[in-house]
Image (cartoon, rainbow, N blue to C red; front, side, top):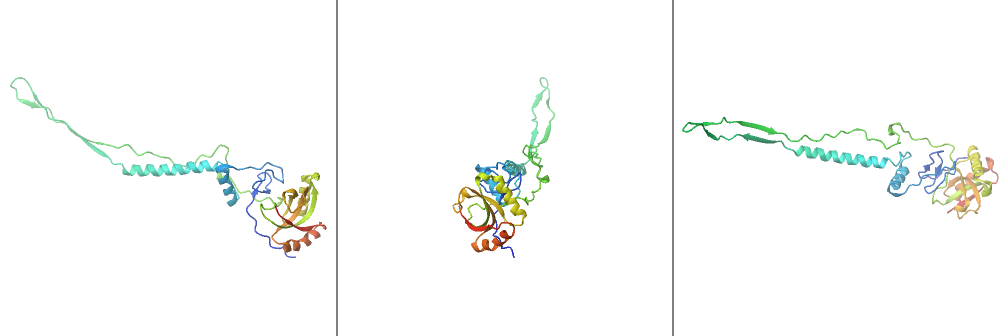
Length: 247
């Protein structure tokens, strides 16, 4: 049976520890329990916009470094423009010729004329040395950083604000523990089912509260979910059923 075409997924953020995808306002990773970063303010906004467009984000230190680079370029351009307008000024010093009388009635003699012409040089243009900008303390060089590959064992997360259909493989009471739900989801993923993840039912109005819901597939229509239901039955989940997921 051909696998139904799945809708294009928006860019996701990934846990730095295990690589699992997570929603923008999620505080803890459902995969490993690590506390996720929360970005606020101007730097947080810029960081979120960067991460939505590029898979690799160097860290918040990039913003002061970029600002320093822009200021350096602007000051260099200003210094070059100012040095091009400077002109050398020439100054000429000419000695006067006063008459000096030597004794009464003696003929007048003159002091030797001294004429000296010198050129006053303007101050040299400032020298600005350019080079590699210093990195923030503890930051790694971008030349040695590579983009990590997506974690093949990461579970799927339901897109934020999206309403759609899925196939419910199992529903475990919250008292059974999150680890049990994650273990069942990983087992389904190893069995070959696509887009397997875990939902907390109380966060969705269409689901009965009080359960960890192990799901497979994120579909735009009910017919797409129903078409994939046979695969769930064939891979060890005979009680799987399709349902609608809404906030």
